[in-house]
Length: 381
Image (cartoon, rainbow, N blue to C red; front, top):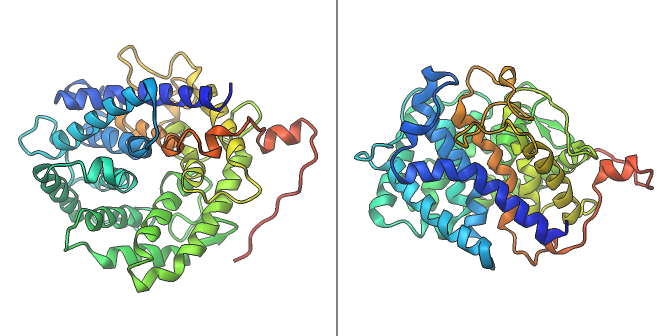
């Protein structure tokens, strides 16, 4: 497949995953139809998990210009569903009004929803009418009642405040932003990786949460906040290095190491790699087209399972198909939709090198094909 054909495949995968969530929410039927079989005691939080995580991944595609043909028709449909969803999720009179203000978990998914707003300012924030915007602001504000733990959760608070700032809320909390961005400087472990708190964990949370939010929070505030203005080049350089590591983790057959918790978020493990392509901060040695081909291999591999979805089209827990024992106790059906974050690069124009350049092998494929390759090396900072 060439880049145009691969893009079509990505759009097909994205819409297959996201449509059940957004369609049900548009009809105020998400709470009614989202399966409750996985950790039913946490189901109160599942609708916001499904919605926030889906939106976090599809937002750049919603924001994209220069989309044509059948893809444009799909984009227009999903833009409408997204705006309706923001209304239904935050309107206290809606049957699908979501929990934002208690139980701990809603802070996480208020942050993912906030990240979606940051990633699609024109098509989401600017397109909302004033009634919906007031409801969204009120919902995000209410999540402040939840105190984050001393780990990646402090970025959830910072991301919510970032969205409130971009929505024009004058009471956004500068302290939560500075605290998160400065504290993670102390939790840096080297070679592009941060601890999840003071300790280091071998998992994909540097890609699920920490670095995607770190980059976008700092990008938002570095121009206007003296306290963190010096962090942008450092944070971006480290993120670029970690994106390179992620690219090297993708095997020649589209598989990757199954390490650490939350592995049921599937190809969401490569959020930062897709973001680095979207925001053009890949290292020079990693070409956009090789990232496209590597991520396509992962998407193809995972989507090839015939048990990834249930009979109604909802995601099931696992990496390759239905693998219930890979799911932690905090995971429900809504949690699984963080996989959508692999699709960030759909926010790039079809004329961007990511999509337009000829296919290129990624690092693992080159190495195991016997090609000459320059050795890898750590960054020192």
